Amino acid sequence: QVQLQESGPRLVKPSQTLSLTCTVSGGSVNTGDCFWTWIRQHPGKGLEWIGSVYHSGDTNYNPSLNTRVTLSVDTSNNQVSLKLTSVTAADTAVYFCARDPLLVVPAARRGAFDIWGQGTMVTVSS
Amino acid sequence: DIQMTQSPSSLYASVGDRVTITCRASQNINKYLNWYQQKPGKAPKLLIYAASHLQSGVPSRFTGSGSGTDFTLTISSLQPEDFATYSCQQSYSNFRSFGQGTKVEIK
Image 1 (cartoon, each protein chain N blue to C red):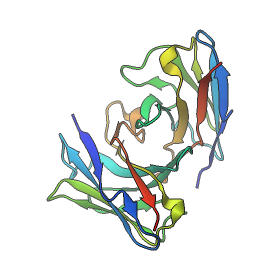
Image 2 (image 1 turned 120 degrees about the vertical axis):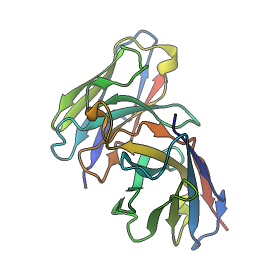
Image 3 (image 1 turned 30 degrees about the horizontal axis):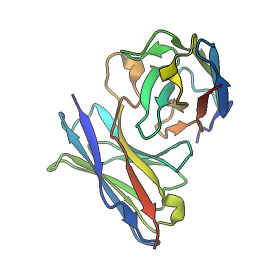
Image 4 (image 1 turned 45 degrees about the horizontal axis):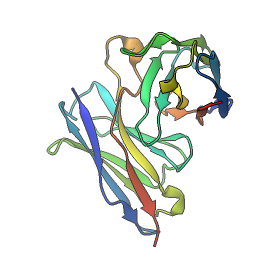
C-alpha cells in the first residue's frame, strides 16, 4: 500500500524559499500511473491545488502560483519535492502531498486524490 | 481555469437529518467531480469519485449525483462521525481545483 509523508522546515522567513519533500513508500515514484500532487490549506480555509508532476518531469501548476512554484521528482530517493519562492505570510498553510491516479481501475477514479500524506504545517514569519 | 463553488459554506444539522451540499462548476465538467470529507487536523478522505461512485469502504448513506455544472452530495441520515468539512474537486482539467468547503456542524 502506497504511503506518503511530507517533511521539511516548519518555519520559513519572508522572501525565502519554502522547500518540502514528499517521500513515497510502498510504491515507486517512477510510475506512469499517476500525477504526484501538492495541495495546501490556509488556516481555517479550503483546499488549494498547487500543482502536479509526472514521473517524466512534466508539470502543471496553479496559475496563481505559476511564477513561484517548482515541482520535481527524485527517483533515486523515491521523493517528490516542492519549492515555493519569495514566500510571504500568505503562504502560511498546511501542505499536503497526494496521489492523483491516471491509470486506475475503475477508470472513473482517474483524477480523484486517493492517497494523501498527513500534511505539514508551514509558517512564514520572521 | 475552472472555478468550483459550494453551498452552503456551513450548515447545522442533527443526527438522523438528511443533508445536501451542492457544488457548481464554472463550465461543463461532465461527471469529473469528486467529493472529500475532512476532519480537523487530518488529511481529506475520498468519499465519491466521478460524481456518483462510492469509494471503497464509504458507507452507503453517502450519495453523489449530477453532471455538467451542478452536483450534489447527500448524506441520507447524518451520523455523529459525519460532522466534518466536505469539499468538491473537479478532475475534468489537469489543472485541478476545489470548492471552498462546507462545514457540517452539530445543531
